[in-house]
Image (cartoon, rainbow, N blue to C red; front, top):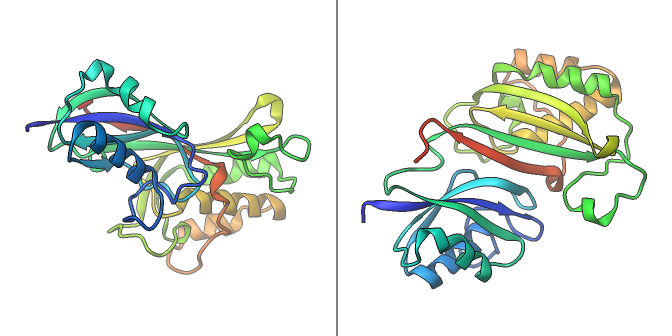
Length: 251
């Protein structure tokens, strides 16, 4: 076998213990998809590009199925989606080299985080995908804080312990807030060449703290002098989504 199947995976992370399989103890997106692909295609291994946390969603997760594929490629997504729960969907199947690794080959990723800014309470069709903080953050301060993350920095202060990353330096290519749904949702978008454990959620929590105190200086100091003070708090998982992953060469 010299080729594997690449898939784009979308999922509602509510109720799942993240992407990565954790044996049979906890239900994960990878575990559910692996089981269904094994049942359909036979024994194989599923690899993902990003280890999203429990409760985090994705529209553009990328995964590779290293195993047999008796279903015609043009029919694979239709057949697999019929078997999957409604909270997980696959699309855009394509052939790649069996050696192609969706995590190592990635050149950039975009995450977004949504805050509910409309009338309280948040409607149920948004509640699973937005964070209703109850605060009234200053839009100007949020934008000022977001701009500080642009460029190459050491994000030591913006990660949780438990990461296996060899370096905490990352390059942020885009970082901005924008209003959606008539201003009822504020969406933070960040693109970087990689992310650390809990990095985006800590960045959001730090920006909200800055907006509450009307100063971005703690963020500025943390980026200028990593290794001293951890930032936070950690924003809740349900507001976070993995939007897309970019690759230098497709397949």
